[in-house]
Length: 440
Image (cartoon, rainbow, N blue to C red; front, side):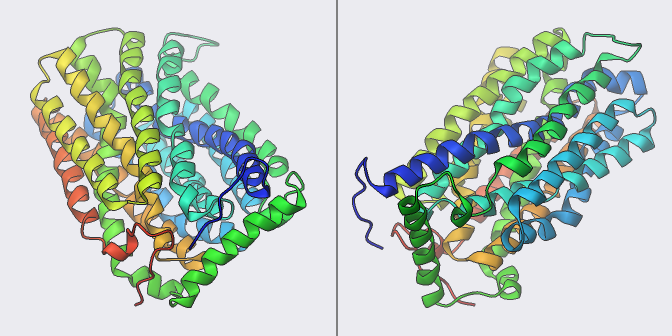
């Protein structure tokens, strides 16, 4: 598709600027809060496991069971964003997970820990793929990887900010409640507030955006409709066919392997760093923020490069190879704290930089409801890796007393994801403005 040159005074320039400024900061804030509430259990574990008498295997299972609840409700959520109302459904999700995140601060048994984590996953299900679908309602294909990169910058940002905040909260003892309980309570409350704000702040689609000028609304609607027509002209894929599509299956497997590495790393990094260094909880959480800062820079840089070149697979695959190498050499260097942190920082750069290119791939060969359901399917099934990563690291740690075997497993999982991404057919990774649509 030939795109006209966009002048600073044109409706196109105005629409792109207003959409980005209006939506992305708020969505980033929502995702940052979501991710803090998802992974703060890793920081709470510095005190919680001792207080509750949890073994590494119990903690790994409880941290990972989040993703079974997530799996069950993921696809319906993304479908409702496409066919019903994004702002209403996202608001429901946000308020629900905020309430359950606070509840995590009042658990007392292993069973309660499992139930609360499962319910937290069920409550949050649909948020991430819902937002990915929502962004496709507002951003053209050629702008989408940058938008996804900015949105997903919330992940490293949440860890950069959440790590020291959690470290500080671990040291408090208010109203007779241990600090790790306040980690869950204090970090869960903002979600409830932001969920209420979401109902009034977000706009479902451009046609409803009274904050855009009429010419700006018409321009973005025309651009998005033109993209849909181009894909439909080459053969639209139905929902069931999309779920059987070769690329969707490969992307699901790749995401499973990648997520295994991501959450195995995220949930266990604070504990691993404390074991390596012997530092205080606050010092460990401050050091843990360093890798995520590198992840933020890498994510934005790779997202920009992927959009500029309109290339997705190699950007994604190379980032995952970096993850594998960083984790492997981090495990090898575990007796050298400085070198291990440097290698984990390299791994973290890859852990986040693969995301923008990856989530731009489904939209190159699917559209509308098929894309929404496929994104939900990839995310829900793939996120089951979020159970296996933390659990296997905890299991190996409990059996061997060392994190080496668990980290090696995460490294191999990332490498498998890198290989799978390169098996996605090239039609889903074209350098043309309008990618061809592979029929099934």
